Length: 490
Image (cartoon, rainbow, N blue to C red; front, side, top):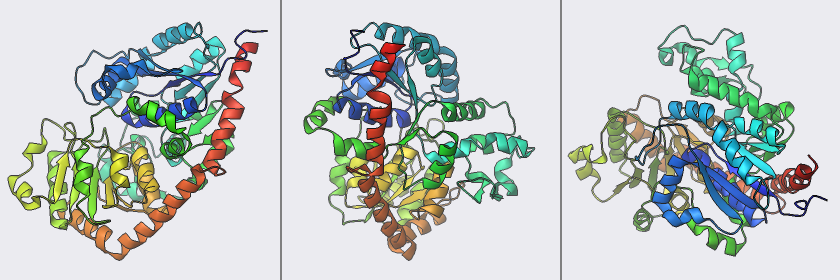
């Protein structure tokens, strides 16, 4: 008998090195560890340094049965505390991470317990090759929305129908962007401009991000199993289509809610030092919110990567000021293209908002959204932000930037009834009018009512007996608790 056959499973978690991917991976890893599994969490060296800056060097010590490892990402060393260039990071991880990842897995196979399963980010599809070479089962984790995955899968059809490549470099201004696509099963009549914009904002088939996302989406669908951070009731249409292509889909979201509900209390306390935020959050802003009435404050955050022009920043600023509502605004140091800093906001704007506006560089978003004073969330529609907003029953004002964010926006506004969209070209009058409608108008009341209904459903699916809870248990039984014995037989 193999002397490893009775050891607990050892799961390797390998996220793409960006904030929006690390968060759900850490939530999943903590959840698995709390259920008795041994975890190795792999970061790139750059991400490891940023986490050490946020939580101190001791974070890397991990916990019994939960440890951190790191590999190089292939990019030149950097001391900056900002997100790396995404196209460069995509190319580098795809071309340079396979060898160091394989070397690390080889070493971990000699550890105790040896690796029994790899859970790899969909963006790290080379992990499947490494798993196959060592006879280790691999599960793909799609950290974004199911509707986003379905959107990326339309690429081949867009080419076959002659829609891609676009003939005009300025497609963003082409009227065909408003064309309804009645042939996209699972998101019927979605307009072309709402498909993931790695496809819509290109006039070439030789676009690295386009090629990458199209490739990894298809790899994800053909993998042995897919984990998606969503829940059946929210994305039933998209999930139905995806499961016709791959029935081994595990919908275990919202993960931050599932992990919160099913951590053993002492595990929660142990894990306080093992956070996932790459930036230090300003906790004072949460106390600032205490002075305001329920549902009276606008929360504004465009995520960890999205950028804008200086003109966009000023239009948003004056729109917020003209709404006459208090607001908490997250302005990252790298939010504006170029070197513009928060201090460059006009003095007359700062005088106008006086003490009803709080501007800071980062915050603990879950705590902010959970605060009773928050009335609406002005967001880029990243999937983590969207789920966190849904889980707290906070309606959204949507200004999507890239990737599947436009798709998330379309669903939030047209299918889920919890959002209002801001036009791509930001206008202060439009911003002020939308904010007032969301905070005071009938549309805002309808959105808040629907948001509270979705919050209730999110709680139900992650409670014992709910659909996400059941899928997590199924994942454990079908794929994780059996992997040790499976590996022993290889």
